[in-house]
Image (cartoon, rainbow, N blue to C red; front, side, top):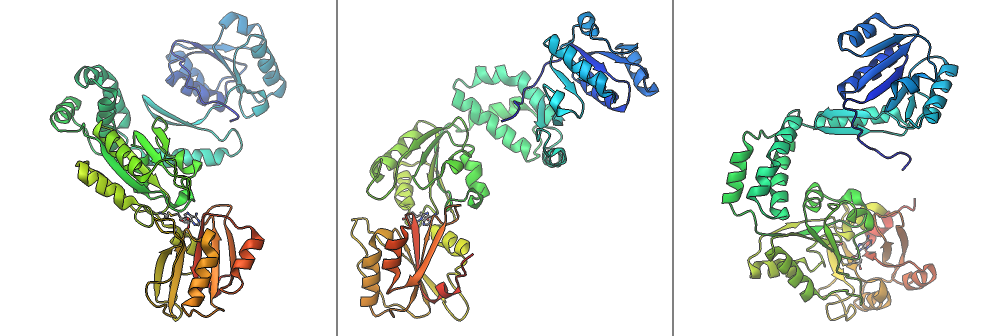
Length: 450
Ligand code: SAH
């Protein structure tokens, strides 16, 4: 982080601006909006600028800048906006000598602070900065934020500020108050008009908004871009997050910052919590009124035991939502460039597991293999030799292509291809590691190494 965004209270503080042209004028307007008292020093003033200063009771001094101006005016901030480098340098040095933060326009080396691109929905303020690297990008981002925020937001934030104490008196717990404000602001952000906060509060009190809820959410195969909008929304609402080993830090960071995050493990043979304990935690936290997010790799209902969590919620009468995620098989196929079905090659796909709940390894196909079929194995890497032996034993051709995709969709993704005959050897030599998806079938011939 090169600079720290802060919001500076300039109310009734003096800002010294040196320069009488267009840029100084624009900075002066901004400072005046922040209710600063302006002292402007310039050898020449644009008429319009001078007019503005005089008619708003700011000071305009038509003279050259002297370092002693700082003694006299004791500004809280200094802005140098002259086109003379020597003068700008002297402004910078004088400000430094007085310990006053200074900005010399368009000269990053001489700036203690920079002006962000601003979205003003007072009291909501948003500043965007590229730290001088890409100001056009910062402005485009500002425009994007500007167009996505309803115009009435500022007005509502004002009213909310005045109504806070009433809400505090009415809703005793922090959690309840947070739910109330979230429901109001979420609707406002969707451009819904909120007419009366006191009506809203009464309604909130009278409906049962206090019961907790469980969100069983698929986080996708690893790349955060594979999250669904719904997953992201719930991640940003949840009070408590129970997450798996397959959920990366990058994804976890997208959860609400102040949510409590609990690792419940789920690596083979390394379960930090048993499934029963997880089910119990979900129910217990929800009963206390929390919104509990069960964040799982891939899709919750594909080898994810999300079904058991759903049944636990049903049994305890806890409201729940299930959010599908992009399962590893689909991500592995698309990120490796291996279509799971392909016209004339494969017309069906079978999802299998190389490891059963009992921890036994794969013990054969339950029904005969079709030549136009793709087999996809989850949790199979450790049992690859058994899978391959069993497939060959079931009569699959030994030259049938097979691919291992590890860390699908992540920057560490690796793809290894071979045939049923040579893949075990290749895998041992390559050191490819879990998590990995194994794809078996003619579709693997479509793979093109990048
Ligand atoms: N519910 C998850 C699967 C959990 S089982 C889903 O829908 O994807 C765990 C197995 O998923 C791993 O052993 C591995 O086979 C597979 N897996 C999960 N993420 C993966 C990834 N990024 N790349 C390859 N395989 C992955």
